[in-house]
Image (tube, rainbow, N blue to C red):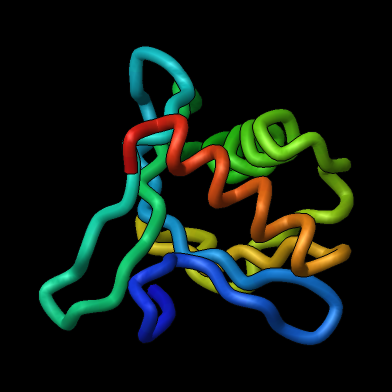
Length: 111
């Protein structure tokens, strides 16, 4: 999970780091807002319809993020947590532009 300022994302060299809490086997793909862990770190709470079998949920996560943020799937990769609910995703590109898109998406979802 992420930053001291309460955002679940932050700039890093070459793009943005994003903390995610993923719930597979949901009715539909959705952003449920920002969640806070007991240690105070935050993450985006995302749901995907795909099951956590053979990487299907991770592939659905990447496709969902790419579609929601208007990015290419190849710009998004899971850095850590491939088999866990808590993941760190890295998005390659212009950090300012990506963080603006993330802020708008989170605000739209009411998070």
